[in-house]
Image (tube, rainbow, N blue to C red; front, side):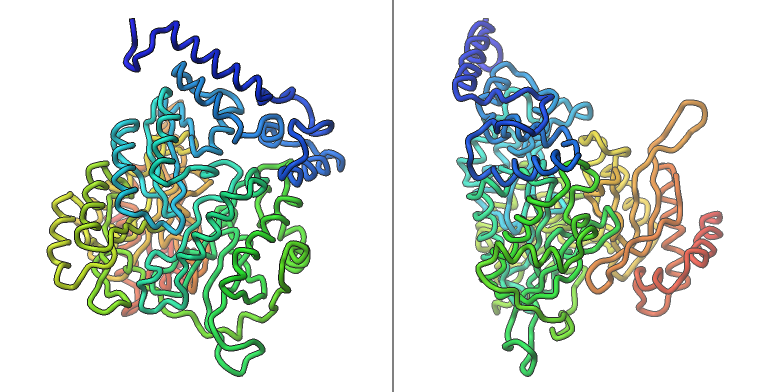
Length: 592
């Protein structure tokens, strides 16, 4: 008797044994998992030697490799295809450190919250052609839960993938011309770029070619995988839509240099290093100016310094920020010169012209492009979630009305570009027919929530559900005219970057008496990035989720009652002390 996949149990056992036999003949069963990094490498000398040598130095200096480092050396995650296939045939999820290795392929086993895989993609710069979007919708329907999530790295995730389907999903993704290679674990995550690159009237540089160039550079250099920890890179072209580049390990920010300075006039990129807002740190200026063609080599050089000298003994400190804290920017830059084909062009940040203004509502609604007679339209999926049918429908709209391109943003939404002015109204109608909005209140336009505990084992609250409940409550009671960001993060890893929200909510568990706990949040206020760079300050602790809407309403009512004309929430919070804010917020909360 066959199962739903057409195999008998005997056939499944045969296939599993056959695939594992191939794996064994290829020598990818690995070394003793308890062994230290000392001794022979499990692979001959190759591009991974830079990692093995770094591990050896860590052990020689008295350190102890974390399990993930041992896992990468014992059995390289890119060499487990046959084991993934054997598991799929047996309808079996990975165990132990194989869960970590699967993340190199973009596959996250998210038990116990979901007994399923989540697949994270690589969509460089967030640019997604319509045909690929249609294909992803098909994959989500056939192998997943029938929906996709837009992430804060302008990326897509497919969830609820069964144990039998990872090979089918990876194959389908590859045949679409996409990849999930290195989308998780200790790798360079999806590259983000200005969402309106190439169409933004204010931009200094179109970042799309740079995102693509670095994306393919990474894909074709195996040694740029298996870093000490994950790594984020962003490109900002100086347009009206930013990309939060100062929250990344490396941020490249386009600047204009006028005549009469110490370098030739023109457009350059400044390099920012060590952003990690979940660890209370923005990226710091590296003190150099780069031409566009120098950006990829510069990123490669910094990555190689991190590979050699990043911490492989403490996962909590295995980020570029901590290497910079230990060494200083100057030493990091000096070490990077050994990997550069050119000399650093040192220059102070002050010689650059000020960055143009950022439109904090520029990712929602209709906006003129730099191309006369055309506009882009920002579409708002509720807290970043799209059904497969909606994504397929948006792809069709983009192909029919625009240039066939969807642009994902770091605000968990997307843009459809190149809409002729005469077709804007019809396009808005077609988007509305899909159940999606192109206009939103300030509260909904700036609302971001991570996956939450519905699908992430680290999250302590159902952030997406709570975000929607919060928006429903506030929209019925308040009218906020200026842009407002409310970010809900399910855990301190802060995928939703609660530290830079006007209001940042960090999930926690709240004592409900006895042995009972309920979901709740710590409340931070006054965060921002770019010209408003500031970490939020925690004002309230342990607010139960059911009490959250009233508490946030009280905060916003106090802001509206006491702010100056035209004053943003960020500016309002910045000019008051914690004690002053609490004095204003608490009495209103009691009356609300």
